[in-house]
Image (cartoon, rainbow over all chains, first blue to last red; front, side, top):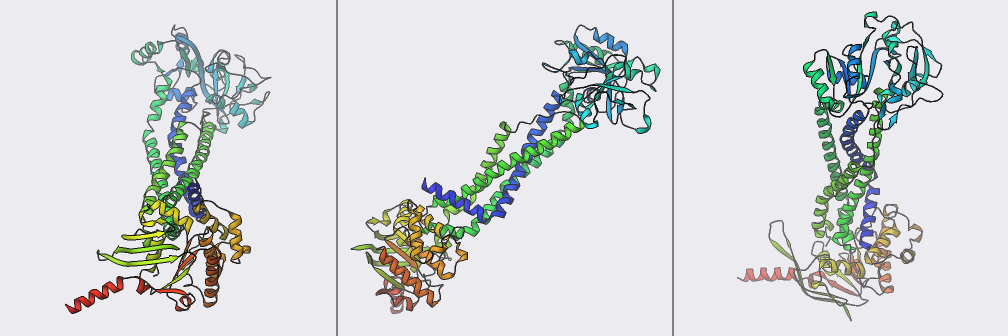
Length: 404
Length: 234
C-alpha cells in the first residue's frame, strides 16, 4: 500500500514537473478520443434522429419521381417538390382499407425563408407525431380553420421570426425567399405549436386551400396537392408499393420511410468511413503522444529513478510510477474526450436542429462513451508498457555512472 | 561487533569488447558498528561498484556480504531493496536530490520507502542540518552546500545502520567540504550509524582515523600485476 502511494506520488510529481507536455498530451488525447466518439456516435444519432423525426408517418404519396426526394420534401421540408398530384389520388388512397391516416399537403410558398405548408386541421387533432404524442397549441392559441387565411406557426419559426398571436404576414411565392415575390394575401397567426424537436417546428402551417388558392397561383392547379402523408395498417405497404410503384405510373409511394432514409445516409458512407479512419488515426496519434511524452520524461528522469533505487525503491515502484503517470494522463485525456464529445455533439445537433429542425438525442454516458473511456485508459497502459518494461530492465550501473 | 562482513566478493561486467571483465575482488572486509572508515582510491577503480554491492543495488558474482545479520548474497532483489530502504543511507557526489520535491518531501519520501513517513522527525533532522527555514524550498533554490546537507539528512532520516557516502565532497569547495563532512560524521555518530566514505581527496581521507587504500582492499590490480609478472617470467 505504501509502495502504491509512493509510485502515485512520483507519477503526479512527474506530471506537475512537465506541466506543459502533460497538458499537450491530455489535450491531444482528449481531441482524439472526442473525435473518435463523435464519429462513432454522431453518425448513429443523426440516423436515429432522422428516423424519429419522420413525424410519425409510415409513407408519403407524391408525384412520380424519387422516393427520397419525396420523403425529404414532405417530412423534412428539404429539396423541391417532385411535382403535383390530383386531388383524386388523395381521395383514392384515403379510402383504401390499408390506410389508417391520410393528410394531403401542398407546398409552394414561404415567409422569410420558412416554408408554408397547407394541410388539413384534423392532422393537428388526430395525428400522433410520436407514439402517444399529439400536437399541442400553446394557449391561448388555436388550430387554423379551414378556408380561412389563418396560420399555425411552428415553434422554431415563431422563435426565430418573433411571430406572436394576432400577427399578420404576407406570404412569398416559392420555397426560397425572394422579396419581390410577395403575395397580396394576408395571413393571421392564430396559434403557435409547442416544440416537438421535429421538422414540424420549422414550418408555418396553413389551410390546404390557402396554398391552392393563393393569389398568383395557377387556377388550374387549385385542385392539386403536393402529396399525401400516410399511416398504413399492417402489411398494406407491400400491396400499395406494388400498386403505385410497380404497376402504376402516375404517383410514387415512398415507403417504408426508415429504409428510404437509410439509403440516403448510405450515400454518405464513404464520408463516415473517412471520419472513422481519421478518428482511428487520431486515436493512434493519441497513443503515440502518450508514448513520446513518457519517453521524454523517462529520459529526463533516468537519474532520478536510479537515485530512488539506491534509496530503496523497488523496480516495481519506479515502473509503477511510469504506468501511473500514463494512467493519470489517459484518465484526464479520457475525461477531456467526453467533454470534447459533448461539445461536438452539442454543436452538430444545434446545427442540424437549426437547419432542418431535427432534434438529436445524444446521451453522453452510454456504452459507447464508457468503451471509449476504457479504451483510452487501455491505450495509455499499452503506451506505457514499452517504456516501463525498458525501465524495469534498466541497469543501475549504467545510469548512475560511478565515479570511482 | 561487526556490522558488515565481506568475504571473497567478486564482480565482473561485460566490457565493450564483449568480454567479461572482473572489476572487483575483495578477499575480506569488515566494519564495526558505529565505526567510520574512509576508502581512498583513484576514479574508475571500482569503489562505487563496491558501495553498490554493499547496498544490494547490484548482485555479486560470488562471495558473501553479511550486514546486520542479513546475508545479502542470499536475499532476493525485493528483500535487498527493503533492507536498503530501512538500514542503508546513501550520499552521492552530485547530491541527487529529487528536483520535483521540496527538501522536506525528499526526506519524507525516503521515509515512505523505509516504511513510514514522520514529517516531524524529518523537520527535526532538517533543523539539525540548519535548513529548517528552507524545508519547503526545491533543490534548485538551494546553494550547492545546502543541497548536500539535505542529501545528508535524507541519508540519515531512517536512522540507518550503515551510511554509504560516494565522494560526498567531490563537488564542494573547501569550506563546504569541511562543513558537510563534519555534519555527516557527527550525525552518523549521533544516530549510531556506521559510515563508509569513498573519496580520492587526501584532505578528506586524512580526517578519518580509520582509512583504507582501495588498491590494498581490491585484489584485481594485484592479480593483474601478478599475472603480468608471471607472463614476464615465462
